[in-house]
Length: 101
View 1 (cartoon, rainbow, N blue to C red):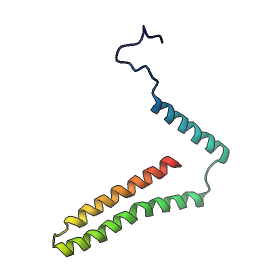
View 2 (cartoon, helix red, strand yellow):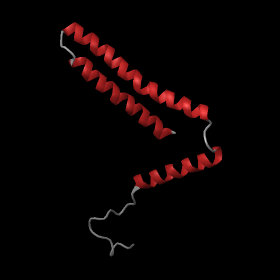
View 3 (cartoon, one colour):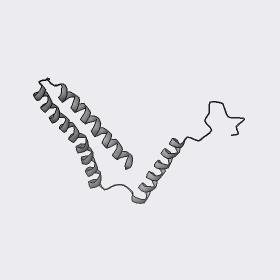
View 4 (cartoon, rainbow, N blue to C red):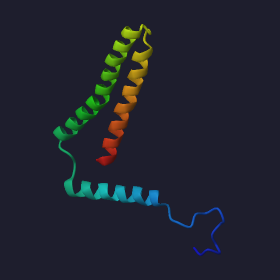
């Protein structure tokens, strides 16, 4: 498409983010074609790692929050807040790990 046909609000450069996403998907398909399906044990191991990656920060947040609540007599303020922070950290870690697979 030439510049004379391009709309004024249309970008001149191609969408590099879309190109990266397509390239990443093609790489995954090629990797799957070379290696095939994962063995059941490997898939179960990954699910276990993902589970602990989510649960561990939540438990750490709960224990730290409970300690802060007892120390500062704040009810469940810190416990609730740090459990949510732990969940966010755990899910973000799993998301990053999944993007790398």
